[in-house]
Length: 162
Ligand code: SF4
Image 1 (cartoon, rainbow, N blue to C red):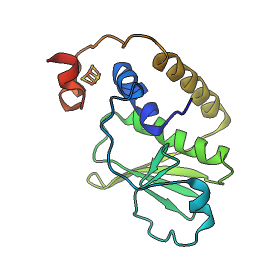
Image 2: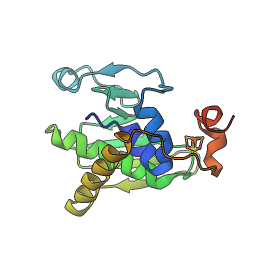
Image 3: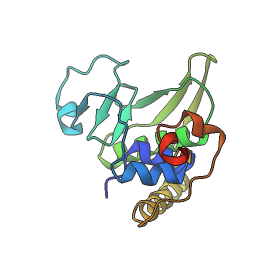
Image 4: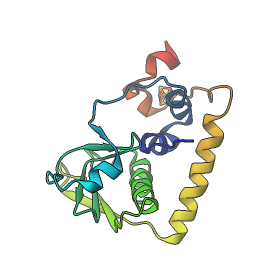
């Protein structure tokens, strides 16, 4: 099963959202989608700020010399979801043989940044999260809609509550 960065994020935000997304009800952003192998082969990837989707799976804001990932966020809202999503990017690239070392969540508006790493313990935890995601998305029915603060900004709001 293909697990995308969005799915890791939605697992923490709302499991109903994760389920709906996995069923093909998707509101995807338009991003350039390239295959990792192709990108590794080319020397033309110079623009550090370019947002790029790899293998239709992970969406990187920018990458420093294939070693440090950056994810830019406006606020610290839903921070655990952002942290695990970035850990998943590290995991995905490391599993593909790319020697990424760490990531940063950059909050330009707050002038802050948060370092994110992936040690063995977190890697094991992440693998458990991936298994839990597989369980959610293979359920026949959507998890129940439970109203929370984030719902009003969610693309599925109408679907859930109207
Ligand atoms: S509107 Fe709320 S309950 Fe529905 S998918 Fe979004 S976050 Fe989940």
